[in-house]
Image (cartoon, rainbow, N blue to C red; front, side, top):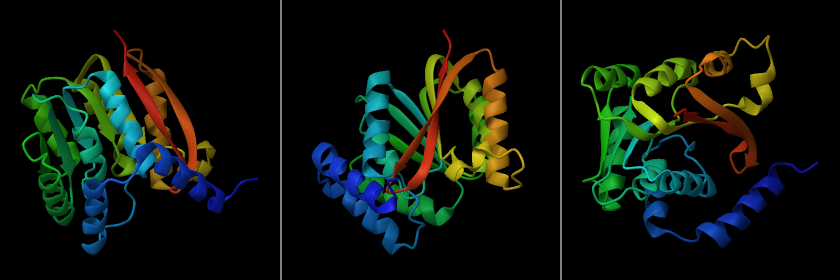
Length: 223
């Protein structure tokens, strides 16, 4: 059985061949590390996957729940057309500060906005304001709140929109009905909601790589 060193080597190989060096993203990663942010951003090949999904979706409006240092935000914002817009929601003020600086350095400050506060509150405000529907939503924040984030995402999208929820496998613990881990409980509750929701079609994919054993759920709002 392959293990973490093999997964790391394979990720490095594909990132070298298919992603390549990117000074802007490298600088964003370095800035986040220097600021003491947790090293939990998506891997380069995963960031490019988000980018390609946004391009394939033809997304003009993107919503991100969980900004961290802005690494995934840069990948997503780069997929936007000139008149596109991205809103990213972040709870931690230090994270938001680093992300805004990274977005400015990437030349994306005019299209990508970081909103500070509890994501549940910010999502509720967007709903109350009657925000124009988003074409793609990427959820990568606190896992116990995933059910609420999904409910709100449904209110903020349209038929044909794509919702991506990261870190759903939890090292395999998502399959454990006896788990008491709040992150696992939130993830299982999320999938109960998705399974019972007739307005969407969804699947989940397990992944291994430099970020270990995890995966993501892909949800399409039905036409």
